[in-house]
Structure formats: C-alpha cells, structure tokens
Length: 99
Image (cartoon, rainbow, N blue to C red; front, side, top):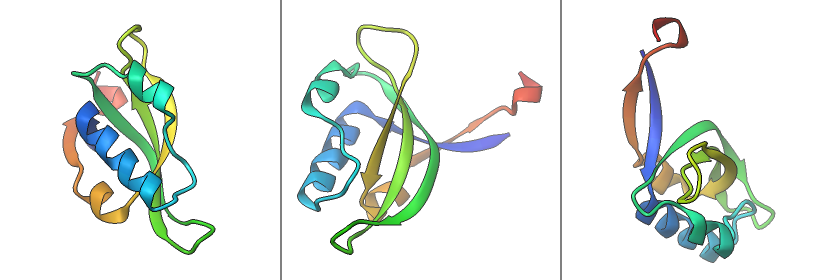
C-alpha cells in the first residue's frame, strides 16, 4: 500500500487563495478553479519544498484534479503554504502490482 495526500475542492480553493496572498509562484487561475468539480477529490502526485523569489517557503505540489466537465484528471501545480500542505488528508491506495 502507498499513502497519498488528497484535497477536496473547497479546501483547494482556500489553499490557493492563501498562496496568492503569500505571492507564491505556482498558482491556480480563476478560470481553472471555476471548472473544478465542486464535489471533487484531487490527488497530490510529486511534492517538494520550495522557496519563492521573495524568500517565502512553500511546498510545490503536482495535483491531479477532477474537473466538472470530464472524467479524466487534469494535471496542475500549486505552491502550498507548508502548514496547509502538511495538514492535508492522507489515504491508503494499493500498489500498482496489487491492482
């Protein structure tokens, strides 16, 4: 089993708003946020610590997001504030070999 972090749509929008205020580099555009499935669960792929041009620490994360108008996830990137990223829910998923 593997553990992955997940985030729902309201929380993703909230985290993005905080990242905008903190002047993080990777942000989600309003037109993209409007397309998110309001009941969607979005999965974190890769993540790493990051320091932006102003010296603010963050965690740059690859997200696979559920949009309202399609079944396949869409990849995007967001620089989270560290305390928000650390607080994301984690779920257990089977290894590929177990599927």
